[in-house]
Length: 283
Image 1 (cartoon, one colour):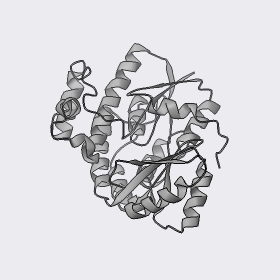
Image 2 (spheres, rainbow, N blue to C red):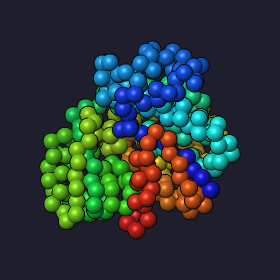
Image 3 (spheres, rainbow, N blue to C red):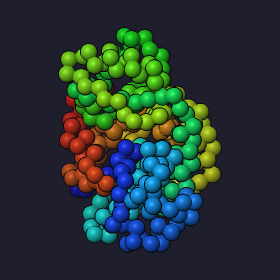
């Protein structure tokens, strides 16, 4: 049984999707209309280096993911029994699963990116080599109140996020753990932490105006690790801004459902994480 995976922010790069825009002219024109600028120019040339900006990076990743997903579904009809996406990528999973249409997904992602970009002064760092429980213990021992585990990506790979100054202190404490490697991530906000609550509350009001359809193909939530429930859509997607990404739980749920093969669009970031998930360290 196959599942198609969609990555989130971080996979953006100049030149992505160059071969796709001409193949999907109607979708590309729709994106230009929704966004108010040329998505092809942004992705392929990025003349003003806007792909580093959350406000532009998220719509760009979402749209290229969407085109790649459509291409994959066309080439392999009936192959995928489940969809899942990491954070931003979950919007692509919802489009692929029939919960949202492309235009709605793009409008929501555009507003999501704008609200997230308003929360500044934060940072994120990737932690590899130790389980999340060790990371949490190290954070507790430092007494820092504005640093949190933000992504639970694999058995021994997590992400911490929070106040920029406290992140630097936390990185030193966690880096002292045997086998730990801490790498800063080039973002401006404390994504997936309680510090994003103001953006999450504003986005909840936006989401309440949209309808979430019943999926024709199941989507597993990256926040709960359970099947996405359209009735809870506004709450789940609002929580996504300020709650940890439970990628390990999502992958374990997919395996428990019978998924044996994972395909991915736009790189191999998630495929690499999937290989590092056994469930040994799940709390």
